[in-house]
Length: 339
Image (cartoon, rainbow, N blue to C red):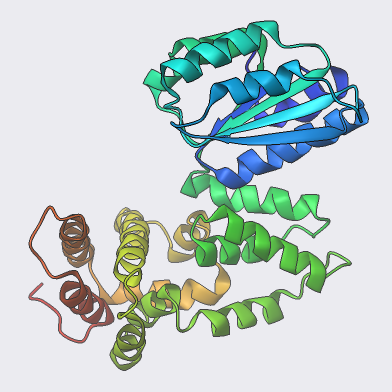
């Protein structure tokens, strides 16, 4: 039985399935669901818990023996199986299929893993779980859904609705849900009454972000070539920076190009910024960039970022660090190509 994540609380309060299978690309969401299920299980008398990490070398007879053995301490037990991947082999498939159909009533089996491709979701063991278990699948939170996701979780922590803060968190954490939740939790500790000092928070965020990828991009968008190079040179030796910078730059340029198109269609700048959820601290930065760079020029920068991405992946022959430096300088207006 498939259960939507938003329906899980209701389902757990009415009926506890003998087996739950939770999977998806967003590990934070999977972990939150596992916590929900454990909480409901505890209320139903499942106190003792045994966990197994399952990879391609796992000895499935160990799991069968655990299920067959009784407990001296609790008549009801939780057995958790964390699959490293959906590739569990012939023995694993046979074991899960057998266990799913013969599980004793005093055991709650919780299985979890990351993202599964369609072939894995059509496997025999998956089909067996569909018949006997509650299946909870978590989809990736898309960029356009992130601000709303943050706002909902802020509300769950008792924080007042604040779209400026939600936009700021979305921009700074770049879709990393674990980092996003940490920011929301910090807000909760800083503002226990739920009332956020927006100006103070945004100022603090801005100061912290100066020497980050986001600060670097904003320096370039602001037309500050000197600051752009200063930040770039201080960060670029970190091997992870070219990948993160290129990914962030691609998303930023795509967004700004979308705004430029809307401006060409005759929309007002305030309307465009509002529809793209640009938080107030960045509005002057984005506005300035849109005034300095025509649509065609931004497209040319985006094409360069695409080539850099292919080079990072070994599919092109550019030097990513050198090319990124050139793109950042051009974005800042230092050494513009012919337009």
